[in-house]
Structures are given as C-alpha cells and as structure tokens.
Length: 472
Image (cartoon, rainbow, N blue to C red; front, top):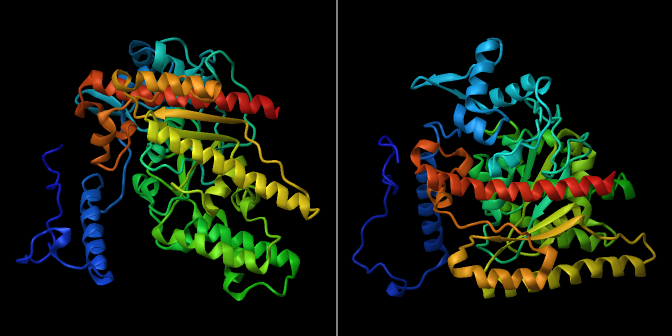
C-alpha cells in the first residue's frame, strides 16, 4: 500500500467508549442502535473508499505501460510498438513515467485505430493466453450513448464480423458469495480493454458494482426503480392516457440520460444502484394489483430498446441481487446469455440446482398464465446458459469440479476461474484487478490472477460469437 494512504480503519468520529463488553450479549439491540451501527459502517466505508479514490472522491483509471499493452491489448511486441510510435509521431505517444511511456485507455483505443489499416485482423485475447495472434478491434473513444466500436467479440478461431445490436449478458445465482459481482465487473473491464463499449446495469441494492465503478446513485429515482416505474407508467398511458397514476406521471419522461452515468473507464457506462432500489420488490406487486396484464418482466428490455441502448453499446452486462425477485426476473428475461457463477463446493452446487429449479418454474408459470389468458405467450429462451466455476482451487476442489462438469456437461465452462488473492488486494482499494498497478504485485502472481479473468472473458467472447451467429 502506498505510504500516503490513510490508516485502514476510520479515525473520524469514533463511537464513545463504554464500560459494556463489546459482544452481542451486552444487551438488547433495537432499531435505534442498528441505525448507529449503520452510520458507523457508512462512515467507515466512506473512509476506506477514499483510500482508493482521489481526495475529492472521484475514481480515476490508471495508465497502462507499453509492455502490458503489448502483452494483453495490442497485437505487437514491445519493440514493434516502439518502432511504430517513433515512425508515426502523430500517433499517441503516451506519458513518460520513469523514462517509460504509459498510455490512457483512450490512447490505447486510438492506437488501435491507427493500427487498423496496417495490421491483419487477429484475435486479441488469445495473445494473452498463448502468445498467438489476436484480432484487431478498432475501438473508438465513446460518445455518451453514441459511437460504437467496430470490435466484434469472436472466438479464437473465427474472424471479425460486423457488429449488430449489443448482446445482454446477465450474471445470476441466488447463492451469495459466488463472486458474481466480481466476475461481472472484471468481464466489463476485460471487454473495455478489448476495445468494446460496455453498459453495466446494477440491479443489486447492495450496490457493490456501483461502488466499484464509483457511481452509486443518490436515491431510487436514479436507479432501475425509475426504469420499472417508467415501464409501468408507459403501460398505463397506453391503456388510458388520462388515467396514469399521479405518482408515476413524472417517470414517463425518464430517459437514458437521466439514469446512465459515465465511469472512470472511458468505454464503460453504468446504470447504478442504491439501497432504495430494493423498494421495487415491494412496489411492483402493488402496481400489478391494478393491472395484472402488465408484463413487468419486459421493463429492462423495453427501456434498453426504447432508448436505443442496444445500438449505442457493444455489450450490456447485468449484475443481479442474490435472490430471484422481480428485478432478477427482468434481468433473466432480457438476457441473451446467462452466466451462473458457482463455487466448487457441495453446498453451492446444491443451491445452484435449486436456483435452476426455481428459474424453470418461474418462467414456465409466466408462459402458462399468458397462454391460458389467450394473450400472446412469450417463449423464454437464452442463446447460452453457462455455469462458471469460481474461486476455484484445483488442489482441493479438482474432484468435485470434475463431478460438476460430468453432471452438467457442456453447460459448465471448461475454464475454471481460479481463486486469486489479487481480488482481495485490489478490493482493499475499491478496484478491479485490471485497475491495479502491476508494480504493486509480484509479477507471476499478477499474471496468474489477471489471466484467469482474461480466460473468463475469452469464454464469454466465444458465447457472444455463437449468439451472433444464431441471430444472423
């Protein structure tokens, strides 16, 4: 940890000392005490967050060194890139730190454009895995909800194709602690490093994803709650324009610009979350009482479509809460690809089985209800459903990992996302592995930790390529 970082524990306004023992048996805990504890946690969390933020609370994305760029991001060796920069002084030259050039992600994407006409198209991520050629992606600096990259997620063996509408990838499991948010965040970052424009949708009221990207919402009106209210008001307006619930009228005018924010990653935007987002789980059943014909599960996809967000981005990644509630059902209904992170333990595998059972029952029930009402029955299906083993330790979990793969076959990813202490170390600074400076870690440890997430992104790229082929 850099020497100028403050102590890890908050020092401001500590609770007053008491003579009571600090244990749960010291006395009853009422809501007032819980509020005090919540406030202490809030101030402590804010202090810890500041350790990974600038003094004004704004997150920044680090620069990338030339060697790292050549190893993971561009299809050139370091000497080749140095020669290209010297021969083309009008290209981004980076910023010298210790005599070595370092580049922002915008500059890396600009270099991609510069190289686009001079290099053959090869698969970018495979170079990170096995030093083979990678596909030139031609990413562009993004305008708000605007210019798309020309990158196409491809499998290592396929060539680049024209980009269609963004695919929606939902990460979901109602078992907590399976690295769902960690995996979603690193997939978004890996996609951005590969030249894609990414929209992250945070549907978890714990807002861990939003905190990681430094963009927690102020209240529910800046979260997916507003999106759900927009869809309910829109449905009411279609039925009876003069009978829209007064509490919902203001939401009719909600747009993407009201909800989606840029992050410190120049090619990642986020629809953030906040604690009050959970109110949607109580409000949606109330709205359903007044209109049982409202297809609440379509709200997310309706919003993305109405605001042209599937045209503005290359990839949409949705992080869900560890529960199968109304918001999660939205994320599942909208998804083209469903990723299910699972730890290689019996309890987590057993819980995941129940998750799939509940998922099947829920969506079959929706299909049956609409068919019985003579409405147009939807057909819920996904281009791919993939179980991803996370926090994997081959020395202790190899046998169970093999059994899970034997049971579920092709539904289990061949790649097992290894446990890495880098996640915890980076998390201390409210950052992802891709944001952590290489100099802060042992090179081999960093390489192993980073490449397990590179492999996870490579898996998703293959699923995206298959999904696009199916849509063609």
